[in-house]
Image 1 (cartoon, rainbow, N blue to C red):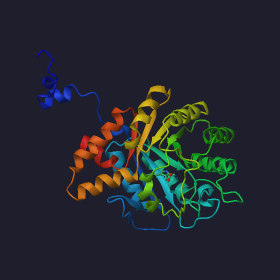
Image 2: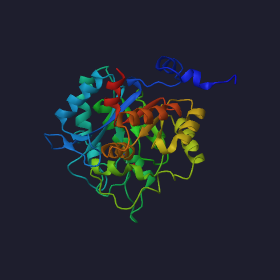
Image 3: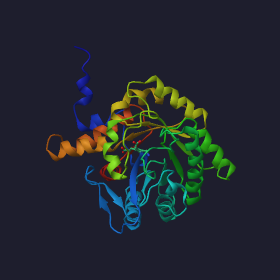
Image 4: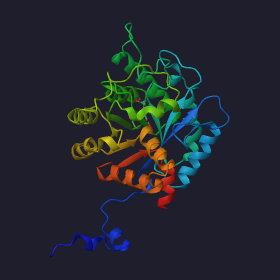
Length: 321
Ligand code: PBG
């Protein structure tokens, strides 16, 4: 036998030397929830270790993330009052905009403060857009709300807008609105290949979504890979500075393909249900928690992600230091 691949697996030092993929804190983004009207952080039951932050606890947690070298945070607002058009999203005094203003100066250059640009956290029906008279999600009317939401977020100091609503033309509409309002330098993260996934389950608790029904008329069908490619190309054409594939672990093929065709960075989102699965299995003693966390995020990188949004970002960043 001449070829013995095991030679390069024999010692920890050799394995480390020949590793093709490495994790680094700078390419991890921590999603965080901030809740209006609470003075204490509130646990999210289906995501052990994750909380809805108060403004104070958010500030402290962002300082910790910066200290650990995490590359960025993605903020989600949990408003006290929701309505049909998601008024809290465009109100400068809405929780997400208030929180952004509160943390951006403090974060300085230590990490990138990003905001979720989607209406679902703010609407009483829980959809990512506004509804027409028949109760269907109205694409073009929703774009008008996204335009205003983008301006409100940019004016709060958000350093990257995460367009996760999955309306057609959202990247172009938001780019146009920002440019017209004097914010040509605020970059856009287009959630290009965002699938209608069961793995968003715990997130719905985290943002107290009242959604009945599903998002299948705007998020992608899990059966379709080509459609994910098309959405990546469309978002790039419309001016996305970065594109996203989401969820991550069940869509590594889509991610690899996106990485192959995209001229802009490709990120992936290890979502709430992926987090919950690992935590639940580990709590039963069925998997080794730390190894599962590292392996899952490493696999997402290996498939082609330039950065990973993960609720494990802080812990992982600390373990990498
Ligand atoms: C929409 C949005 C969702 C998630 C992030 N942005 C929910 C959805 O589309 O149903 C899910 C993230 C997660 O599950 O961790 N604003």
